Length: 317
Length: 274
Image (cartoon, rainbow over all chains, first blue to last red; front, side):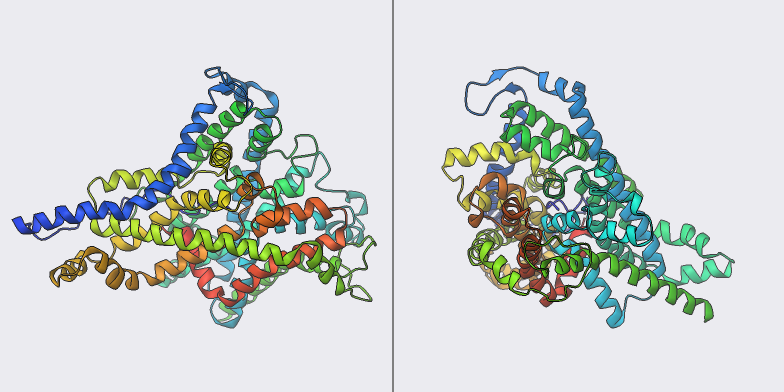
């Protein structure tokens, strides 16, 4: 997972009232403001040098045809044109979008199901054990998850062993190597990584819901489904927003799992933008095209995440 | 109530199923890691004669001593500096409310959803120009920058909620801003700082992309990056690969189990904050 766990602006109110400034006061605050900048500066410098500058360079590279060593040739928007017309690159972007179903929708939907089942039993020793175990996939390197699942899904891995045991040996295959199943198989790994996080976040959110709401719903004769739709779901808007944000970013910016489990194959079946940027920039030496794809990826993330932020926070009660 | 007891039961069954699914990959890896070397392990199969020695072999093959040292050096380079400068910036933006602070904060927010892939190529050339490729600095310096959006966001959220009156009282007592920061604000911010430290540690330790792009020598990478190289080298020896992977993820597991309460709290807050 990247560091983008957090989400967009809070719009927290900054205008806390200060005492009416006297002249001496004002002087002191002005000086404090000057010193204040010294506190912000180190972080800003690191950010500017190692994020903003590279970001601007990515934009610049994306307008050139450059092999990383020789002379760069200005090509304008040609690289972007290639990104949007090249069937391989479109397929790669499509793969990332398919992965959203597995990395995001499945963990959130399953997480909601599990969380509403376990709403009341996360306290006590059992609760601690459950939380600890469900968090394990968040704590280990994604690379390790990739290795573990490559083994699980391999020809003589556990999944096929289980299938053979129940007489479905005919279905058994090398899941990550098969053209039809490779992408969903990668998706399953992502779902495994993110399910625990979503579940715990949703359970935490549910524990904050006023029990009176449930009692009221029951008195009105609501069954579990109705109760879920009328009480749980609306109260969890913000948590669901967070889960979707985190998991969609994980899907679109996926790299580690794919690199380790399939390296993008078979063919281009599991190649994702992150992997293609890496390949284009460092093996194919097509820095310009890689950068254009990077810009598109960035915009894709924003296009998915910003509306969710708006929806989940927009009308705060 | 009967209903609630039945709910409890279904809840437990669901949770246990989830736990089994979560643990299965680890158990399966362990069962493979204990098979005799050179055999082809299958699925989940407890070996008749578990080869615990495989772990010793993997320890040597993975060069674990060097990897641990390298990861610790990188963490030591990234975490204290990130946490310190982010705390200072959070203090400046959230407490001192520097003029133009909103603009600067907006600039930081810009990076919050940034995929690392978007900047890794220019970072490569930047590190090359600085002559830092293949050194740990090539991972440390960019990571500090890349963590700033989240870290500043996190610390600012804390400092915004500390009453300004507190700072004013300290000023009236004649303390300088620096004293105010260290003596009053930092001690108060301890829980926020602790959570941030945990997250930074975890993300640094597990950082993969920067490690494989910017550093060729696996013994100068993070644990995750080293694991990638290990897979490349021993990918065909499944027994050793599983043993090595388990070894490489053990340090995080240990740290996690010791601090699990704080870890979970930090991860939950880390996601929800904002």
